[in-house]
Length: 298
Image (tube, rainbow, N blue to C red):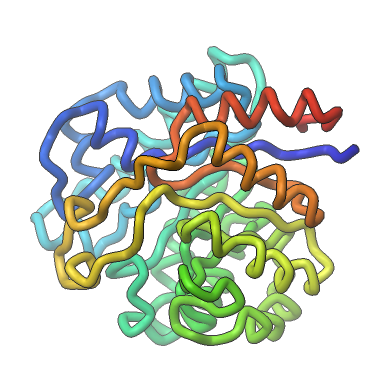
């Protein structure tokens, strides 16, 4: 039996669903502005469901996204708000870790928008330095190319905290990133920056087994947290797209998601959870299955 770190589930889609607001290009950041306290409530629900970690609602707080809406002046305040709500939820729960989320610059699933290191690294370093003192680890999420991952990894060093790198893979071939680069090509930057764990996220559950087979070769703790979308539509891969262009799949019940996750653990994964469209009910069911199988949840 293994010691498992149980991540939380998706934050952005859960916020959109609970708020009832129409999605905007600012996604979870917009909801946090319009509905104070909702982020804290979602963190609390994930902790109550058995999650070990609260992932901060900072994924999409980037200058380039805020500037489009004349909100860049709130860059630091938005990060502080997200950090505070995660900390308050943990304090109320009495235990748990906080992972500081850093998502892709410009847009998600868009490797063609990857910025060169001399531009990307200081942007990530600014965020890492801001959130580092308030989190237990940095969680780099949904990196779609090797260069995109490198910019985030290099910048994340400014936090002075352990860094977990998570990449997003092709939904039809989990051995390659969304850039079509083999996962194996991450080896150079993993050797150079030595993240504490490597993961795969925000791809369909069916792609994760192949991705984990590749991640295991790096010799680091590894894991997965999948999304609940049917696919990534072309309309979402446009400038200023909203999540309204993505379709929620209706077959991914908590039971079915748990079956996938238990399979990942069977492959040696020790970090599992959920991404977009995977909510507290999924995490609660997975928590119960882990305990029933004799695993210990860290």
